[in-house]
Image (cartoon, rainbow, N blue to C red; front, top):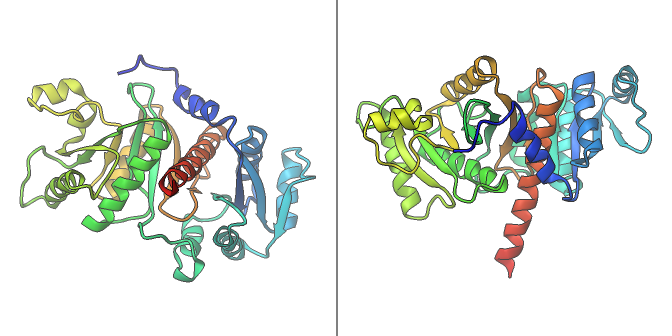
Length: 316
């Protein structure tokens, strides 16, 4: 593992790594408060996004004045309320006018309802899922946790897509073969614990090429996923155990709790994306600071350009 970095150091590296890539034309959905507008404008200043502000003009201008920012030269699409903001932004993405979406000052379910609507045109053959990208100072590796926002109780089909989405993001971040831990309460397959059966099935799916680009192992308890000492004490012989890049939780509650415990008790800095739509979606929290919002923008840019390179290579 790497030497322990300073808090936020890995996310700063992500932002630096994204510099030089063409900025991502991004619909910023309902940026009507200082935090969401300020985060979007900071990402613009860093060269990560080219913002298209979608929301009530009067409220956006008031938020800009509150942070002493001139919006001259920035495209602004006036909408009457948050539902309309979400629908208009999603339509821009479906048309190909923008390459990404960034959540502003509206509820997550408003944005995701518009995104998930079949008529919206953003669905792909893969289910969408949320990935937390955590910079945990006490852990020697980048750490992704999924799915803590969309799938409440994912079945095996959904978990296949959840795993593949996380692998894609890890590879976009520069991890050539991400190590994926499929979490449960135990390390053995037990018919009475469904998550152990699904973990075993996902490992076999990876062996058969149904999941690509990562190294999977599971079921693994969380201590054996992130601690080499714990893995050794259980005599686990695995390339994943103790050094996972990706933690796949059994359900939304577990993923959400793991991520928020690391944020609030271990000083982790969080960023995150929804993956699996035609465009990456920056699903920032209202409590996220500017660095978290910048890291989410960097992730979206890295992922979008990764998919472009991959698609171009496939076409050759």
